[in-house]
Structures are given as C-alpha cells and as structure tokens.
Amino acid sequence: MNPMPELIPMLKQLRLSGILDSLESRNRQAIEKKLSYMDFLGTIITDEIARRTQKKLASAFRRANFRNQKTLEEFDFTFNPGINRAMITELASCRFITEKVGVFVVGPCGTGKSHIAQALGHSAIRAGYDVLFTSISRMLIQLNAARATNGYDRHFAKLAGVDLLIIDDFGLKPLKTNQDEDFHDIVAERYERKSTIVTSNLDVPEWTDAFPNRILGAATIDRLRHGAYKVVLEGKSYRSPRPVKSTLKSPKTEKNEALKGGEKA
Image 1 (tube, rainbow, N blue to C red):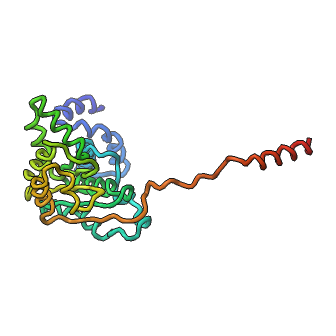
Image 2: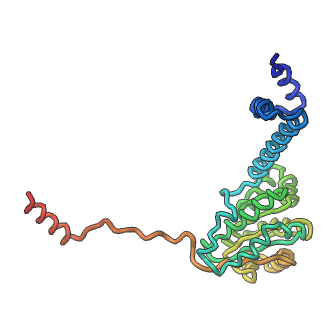
Image 3: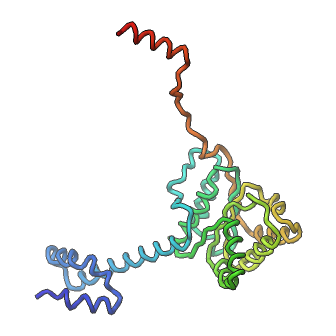
C-alpha cells in the first residue's frame, strides 16, 4: 500500500511539504541500506533543515539587493599585492558587527571597493545577519520619494534597523541640501547600535567636502569614524582595458598583398 497520497496533505498541513522532494529517494535508500526507522527519520529531517536554511539564505540575499554576487573567494588579491588581505579576512569574521562599529573601504576607482563591501555583506548573511546594500544616491532618493508618499518613517526604520547597512560610492557626487540631513539622521540613529560599511573614492578627511553644511558633515563623519576599521585599496584598476590586437593594415601592406595575389593568379 502506497502511503504517499495520505502523507501529502498531512505534510502540507504541518508545512513540511519540502520533505516530499527527497522522500521517495530517501525511502529507497533506507530499504537498500536497511536503515532503522530512527535513522530514516533523522535523514529526512536533516534534508528539511538544509532546505529551509538554503531558502532562508536565498531570501536574505534577495533582500540585501546586492549589485552582483561577489565573494571574497572570487577577489584576486594577487592583482594588487599591497591590499591588506589579513585585515579583510578578519572583517569577514563579522566581529565588527558584534562590536557595532563601521568599516570604511576607500581607494581609487576600479580597485575593488564595491566587491570587498559586497563580499563582507555575503559573509554577514552567512553568519545570520540581515544586510542591505545601496548606493548613497539611491538611498537618499528613495528616502525623499518615501517622504512624498508618507512612507518615510517606515523606510527610515528599515535603513536604521538592518544589522549591516552597506553604502556604496559616498562622495562621488556632493550631497544636496536636505540630503545631508537625511544622511546624518541615518548615521546618528545607527551610531553604536548597528554597523555600517561605507565605500568611497575619497579618503576620510575629505568626506566633509561632500556636505553643503560643513558643521553637520563634521558631526556625521565623527559618528561614522568612531571605532571604525579602515581598509585602503591601492594599486591598478581591475577595469583596465585589455590590449587589443590591431587588425588594420597599412595602405603599403595592402598594396603589397594585392601585388602578391596578382602574381599567384
């Protein structure tokens, strides 16, 4: 007698329908290996835990809104040997999140700032933290749009409450009036409560230049800097163009080839 028709609705009622994905194969395995009932039960429960863990991770990665799926394993540390690999590896342990301090990743364009920031975000998700990745311009535009639709408080709470907020490309463009206030409010709310990663082409002493209100900028940066780790990326750009072989021929070469072709004919 096949018990599957009766099991299906019961598993769905218990929200264990994922077990159905491997139940038949696990049942065959139990018969072939003569597993005990307890071993069989343990196997399918382990499958369900693995499935739920994977589903939870996939959901966390979607919520994080990463620009692309970058990990530390993919980062080429040999390209710029001066990069402090030991420090980055230590940050990947996510101890800075438990310390509730920030991380600055600074350096010229193309040296891997966004890659490192997103990779640290990946490590944080795998460690069980909620992460949100955004560029500073997108964050401030969305905050302003939320204000216009009476959703500011909810969106602000999301930015202020996430375990790790990654803000990319700070200082790429000067902040506008009111944007500096919104940014300050986010930083002040997260100060000593949550961790923030900021990437920038500018070194930290230059960050106040991005604020129309220098006094407000100094107060914001002071909170960000308190206890923060600083990763400096120096060296060549990973975006350097590859050498292209020229396929163009000089008029003299074309003339010689035409003459040779005529002689062969």
